[in-house]
Image 1 (tube, helix red, strand yellow):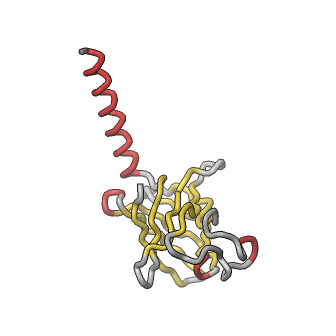
Image 2 (spheres, rainbow, N blue to C red):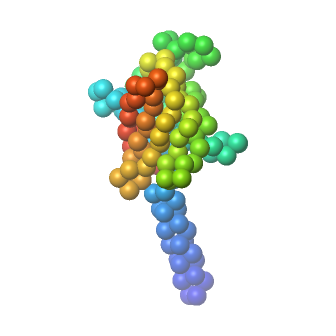
Image 3 (cartoon, one colour):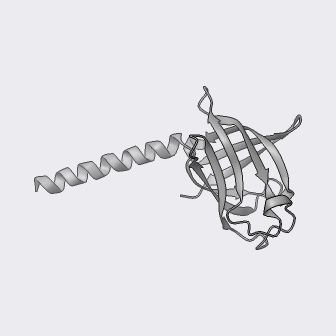
Length: 144
């Protein structure tokens, strides 16, 4: 009986720690939304890169064309799945991530990833990107 109680307690602590991590870290899967229509476009996974920064790549296509014919360079004609959309995001003192780079394949546009921050208790991710002095913010919804 003690073993069952101990196992239950350990499982509940592990779950609580996981939930806390979920609310404080953008690592995980996110549904990206078109900033004009609000339609779900992809599932992107935010992960820790080998150099300790955060990055994101598309892991699922939710109704876009199969390949990125609008893309240029290395992604031209390639599947959307696997395209890296954010990289070199560094932790900032205010608890956000930023000072990285980004790529929006649907517009074939590179941008400066100015600020990435969790909102709504970690259920949403606000991604602010800038080209020159023009900035736009997209909201991603947690998918895991």
